[in-house]
Amino acid sequence: MVIVIAIIGVMALVGLFFGLVLAFANKKLAVEMNPLIHVVEDVLPKGQCGACGYAGCQAYAEAVVLDKDVSPSLCIPGKKAVSEQVAKLTGKAAAEIEPQYAFIKCCQPAVGNNKYDYSGINDCLAATLCQGGPKECKYGCIGLGTCVKQCVFDALQINENGLPEVDEEKCTGCGKCATACPKKVIAMIPAGSHVSVHCNSLDTGAVVRKICKVGCIGCGVCVKQCPYSAIIMKDNLAVIDSSICMDKCDNSVCLEKCPSKVIRTYKISLPEIKNAV
Image (cartoon, rainbow, N blue to C red; front, side, top):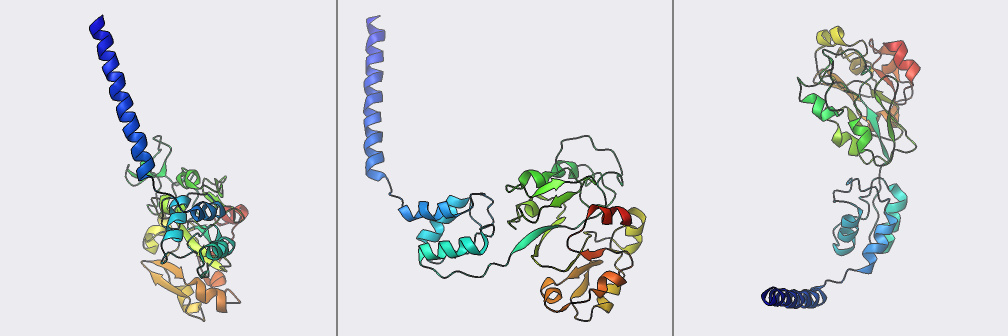
């Protein structure tokens, strides 16, 4: 019994000794944080989206305060207002931030048009591990909502067609949903874009016709009809240069001439999708 008490006493003394050493080291080696970092962090939207290239808002706040080469305009969700505030706090020059929004490059309903019934984990990435996913179009939206789960601003929801739908008023353009999508169906496009290609398929027109009624068939009519050369064909898919289209186009002739009607106004409603299917 005496031996046990002695051992406990020795262990207590050892613990106390190391506790004092750690406390002393913590006080001596502590690095004081620049108070400006907390001020800058409070200005940021706290989405922790990583669009700035740093691991969260605090990491970016530290970088922009301590590193003279880090721009005060990297917070995409914060847009111009936050950029100007951070620039003022850090004594740097704010750069122009072009507002952008998430755009879903697919109109084929996720319900139906499948090659098999998927009953696995409710996650798009998990579904792609089985033959590339259940959808007949290997480039199309799977519709399991992985992007919705990743959106920290509650700007995405799955609509009645089983496709993600963007709430432009809530979307900050952080791009986190685009990064999460295994099919790369989500793209970030400039705010104010007139028209967009509502398709993500790189298949030939013959293949698209067999599996999708609303896909781009790669005919190139839009390229020939665009008077400003704002459209090119890349890997069987029409690609629009939004900067040219927004600056010059005033008649949207591509919408009228596209035989599959895959080129449409940026904001598309559910009735329009239903009528096209």
